[in-house]
Image 1 (cartoon, one colour):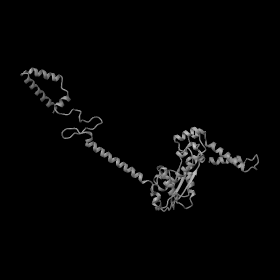
Image 2: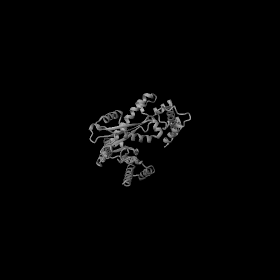
Image 3: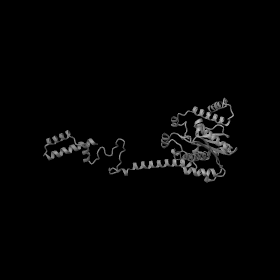
Image 4: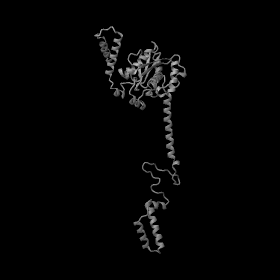
Length: 359
């Protein structure tokens, strides 16, 4: 061990000193005492012995020990087997994660829910979805689509949630869906004024209900609705499917119909209100849109019930309902000019409209 080696080295040095001094042991003893008072550095001593320094090859905080070969030579980092093994393991894990993500992405919406409902005896399954709940301007649009049981393969190629598709892909799918034989579809638009009157959630549900009512009776006997709420008054049994536009083919087709329909409406509105560039952002609250709002103020299609427009216009639902009731009363008075000046019909109509809208 180290202590025995050190003792042997001291004895050997003492003997050499005695021999060189002609047998004078006092000189050797003096040298030995001097060495004890000033010990040789451990690093220098290990170097003389042909041994590596203490810290070389030893694990440091946050680092692993550097491996060496049989001759005691330390390997370079690029030759380190452990590091290569870790790199290979990390590469395998990365490939596995990419493979899982790719498989998940490639699957897209399927017809599994429809097939399960067919097995229960339902003949035609319709999908319902909406587009435009979040924008600050423009309508909310709902779409419905009933796909045939055995459509051509080209019809469903590339079908996915409309939010995951670019504009060219959506337009191509819209053309295929709306022109294919055996596909039933419809779209319903609810304007911004109605959105302010009844709130955006109720407007979206109304749009889906009215879209379903557009199709002929018997076009479907079950509906799959995207989201977590089912509109009241649907003409067939229905169930809500969270993220249905990404998992169910008929809902994905309905989402494409709703999205493309709304985008085309926003293109037309962009021509009427060029200062807001609706063609680019479709009415969503991007920085460009909010900057245009601060510069020009809201236009006719902006949703007064949405911030920051609500604060800019001091809008309230009660104020809107009162204005609409007054406008309806004036319209009725204009249509019946023979009414007596003291006729209370316009006021009664206004009160009735207020009560109806409040309900």
